Amino acid sequence: MKKIVLAALVPAALLSAAAPASAQAWGHRDDAARYTPVRNDDVRRDIDGLRFQIDRAERNRAISRREADGLRRQARDIQRQYAYMSRGGLDRGEYRTLQRRVAEVRGHLRMERWDRDGRRG
Image (cartoon, rainbow, N blue to C red; front, side, top):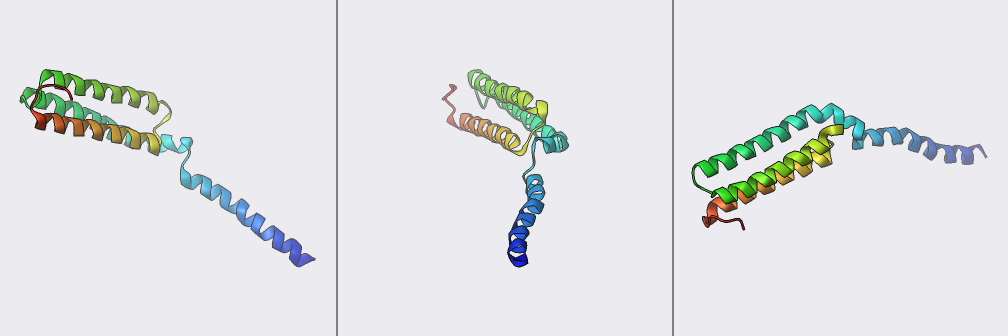
């Protein structure tokens, strides 16, 4: 009888001991505040760099004013999304979303430089 009770208690004890460790490994919203300064700096630096690249491309006449305005609008949308998301701290998913959006706009900038047609498309 003791063996049966002991056999039933061991898995329950293991599960209760593993639960706090697994909860910490995934990183909750509370953990976001700890990493937010680094993530904020990265995102801000990327957005500022993107704006600089757009301005430089327009100044060097690699893209038209119309193309630059559209790219600036996309960068501004990312900035707004960043401001909204960063209120409670950026978690990994939000950070990746912002990084992906910045990369998409950089890709659009690259395409606009190559197409040389002077219009958004």
